[in-house]
Image (tube, rainbow over all chains, first blue to last red; front, side):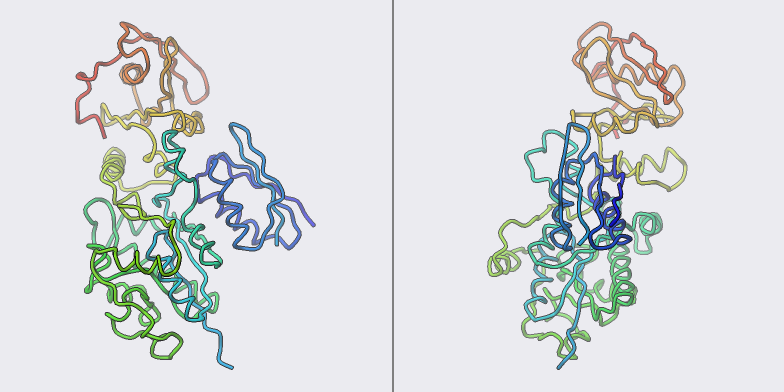
Length: 74
Length: 347
């Protein structure tokens, strides 16, 4: 199992989702991906993308400037 | 046992593509969605840059549609490939800079490539004859099928009964009698079908799903190309045209002034790429200067920046000007009055 970090800062929807989707394609089941974003919309979109594609959101954290989502590849 | 047929549905996030996909799913076809991101797609998040729109749902409607349908959605970045569609449209532009017919041909062509790579059988779209003045007319729909290379693999479930039979119909993969015969600009049949399927929270953007149908956005894009002397753009250009007031006092520079906190926050991300400024003596917006301004031009930009701050009625306002490398200086200017800003400066 590997753990990777994806920098999706300054990207607006749906680019953070596309970058996440493309990164996940290179990973295997059980791998962990942490996505770091600045678009608040990712808090809705990446979980939605995970739900329809069978991945699991483990953690979502945010402050004023950054939104971090940790997911497990399904 | 017959083979499970598979279709890819172009999902824009609007009602028509949602209904088209659902119509085919109901016939037992395995459907997955595909959504092409050109950079110009209208999304809740782009609007959400502006604080006043924060009450609206910050959702991606294509993802939402896929979730309602219970299907996978493949979002494809076509930003670079799309440039040629926008810059050199064979069939020209619509009312603004929208190359709708070329765009649809491009997307169906990409979907055709996708079904070949992924072993799918046909393509479905939410097109309806007469729904849109450029790309959804009786005479242009065959053009899309032919020029995209999709030919009779392209099925439009919402108006299929008004069109020649496609391969999925001829082969009996789908029952033509259960497809629809919608036509024209009325939305009543779609709304009735949505009610039948139990959809009641769908997106219906008035200008379609593309910023290029918007006059204000198109004017800014044309201004960008004119100022550069060539038709080219990158993703940052596309994004920045969505944000702020754009004011061009001279051909060599323009000022982008944040209208709200959300826009200011977004523009913060570009502070190392543009000379930027904000009022030091009063509250006021963040402004970016795009182009090659002279020292005198920067003073004009500072006057404009002061104009949109709380010191607009003051005799003098201090404005901090930051170079791309972060070095700062403060200038004192008289805010420009509203009637001193020529209308032609406003893009």
